Image (cartoon, rainbow, N blue to C red; front, side, top):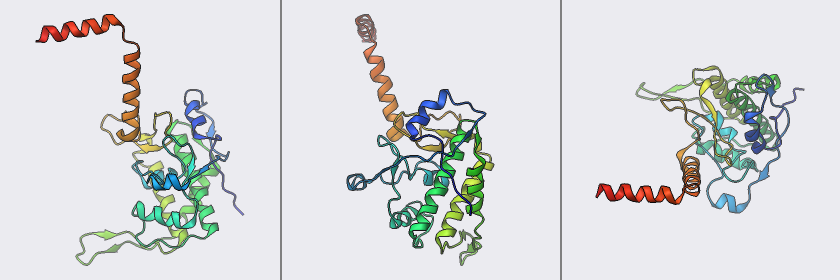
Length: 245
């Protein structure tokens, strides 16, 4: 029986702290995280699922994450996995997920997160995490289907939980082996643990999205500059304004 592993570090905040100190030649992975389970208040606020990673597989990794609420477990029940599938338009009519299916989904998620984190840090992923993704991807999928006009194709229908997880794992393989592999990033906001694909032209995007993370960082930097301003700076600014009028 093949055992699946989870990523390195008890919490993702620890991972953010390790950015500057991690030995990039070492594998990342194998120690399970400790999730905080989502509560009804979280769900009512509508931020149960975070979908700003730019890829299906990384959005799946973000079902255990959050802004301001570290490592919040969103997949607390099988119906929520089906809801996530609809949210990301993976399946309009998702299959039912049994408790073992949901446990398998979490194992795949942790393997994807661990490999993506290793890539973002230019480190070697743990072989067990890579093997996990490959095993999940091995479930065969049906062929794509042409629409009646023969102009567009629909992805294969995902009739079983195993097929859903295979589609997610295949997206991860395509991402990790494709041209955007070097664009996998960690959000630099201290309270955000989202991994994303940097699609900016310059390739130096620092956060997963401007709202909320980019705006929060900019606000923090502005307040920091204001705290370091001296009375002489304010006087010089007023003189410049007076000269413009």
